[in-house]
Length: 181
Image (cartoon, rainbow, N blue to C red):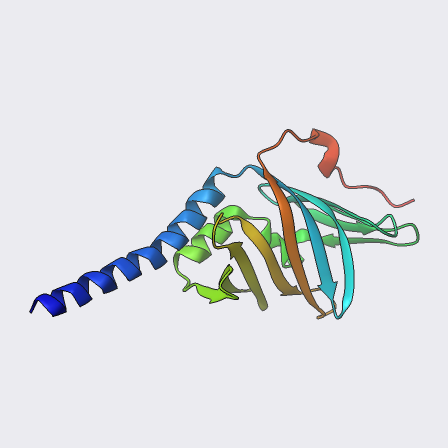
């Protein structure tokens, strides 16, 4: 009888640890107003690096190390600009619309089962509007660690983030969408 009681307690403790990962991620997301981080993005084997700032809800500014490429969202439009090209998309037509909406992420995570990857990342798979988004969190800090999506052209895009700074002072004009030259 005592042996069964110990096994029962063990399963309760294991269940609570798993639930607490999700709870810690949700609590962490609730407390974040903005993030600044370095990124490595891999789209079909083409790797690019840079720095991004996210301001919730739905604003992002990314500057790539090469090509003077920037990505900016003001919450409604997403602009990708290089020296030679300019693309503007409605944000709600891209997977970033979901990733940049922490209330959406929290609502989804509450009902999703977590998976562990490489004993380092907590993964949630979100399906929304014909998009599949894998979102990853660090299992120690519970910070966002990256995501995997398909871009507008159906290329698999994997973004890994590092050197995360939370709730920093940011320039209000950072998320102004540039115009085409």
